[in-house]
Length: 248
Image 1 (cartoon, helix red, strand yellow):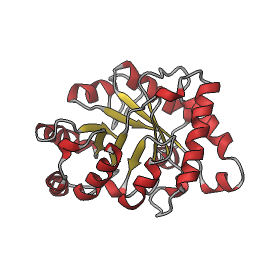
Image 2 (cartoon, one colour):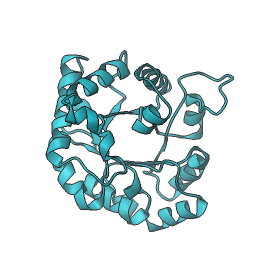
Image 3 (spheres, rainbow, N blue to C red):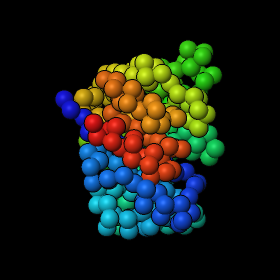
Image 4 (cartoon, rainbow, N blue to C red):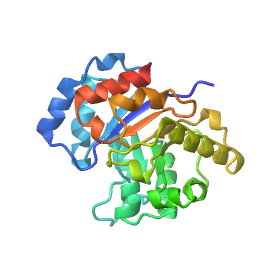
């Protein structure tokens, strides 16, 4: 079964308005991108990216985070309802930096995914192991735990999964295509056997120092359906090359 291809950029806490304008100007033939492609900017720039859809209507705009709560006294949070009202297409949930820097638990991430789905906002559920966990032979246990806790009571019809080995994020290190594919295959096995999902319908992305030089080989693997990209998504030329690779 053919699964949808994705190329998503996570800008993290980068880019001001000038850099955003440069990025948009440097996109190379975005109308030819034949995949689900999008950018998650800083929250303050979400509306600027939504405005860019006038020139690039296929552009999807994401949020790097969302709240698990409805409207209320939650200073600094982003209500899913507000994101949807603004025109946001997807939200990240469980990125390793949210897990490690802000101590987000599997249970909290699960609540965010469910809240996003309740408002028809596509959640991109992130998971991955640290280098210590991989070297000590705990990778499969870690991934299974994150999957079963983070995806509890989640609807399989509106979800994207992003595997991000923590040791490969922003380090310049990249899991080999074989290592990445092996982890993706394990994820498919878990969601099939433990969550009773049809894994052939679930797009699983790879994240971790993806760049134009290695993206073709990564996407050539059977179980990899796209990428969640950090640094290489910051320039229009680089991101265009990634989107074209996913389109082909």
